[in-house]
Image (cartoon, rainbow, N blue to C red):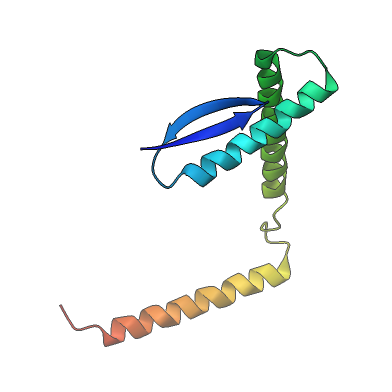
Length: 111
């Protein structure tokens, strides 16, 4: 186990993590620190707990927006058959796969 010291909202936090995860955990902590500092600047006098609460809410809001955006992209994919170029490309790939299957079947030793 590795031990690292994180700085969030001006306070040190000693954290243990798996070996090799130090850089990742430090990066995540810097994201939390950035949001906590934004909360402290927007509302001077916030307690440490409330600054961290707002940091968590800011990050959760960003995550929610990204999930919603990703879901919207999935529903807009043009794979309903109306997209002629995509349909042709898929048919061509299917044909290539069938040819490869036939070649592999022909070269395989009989079992």
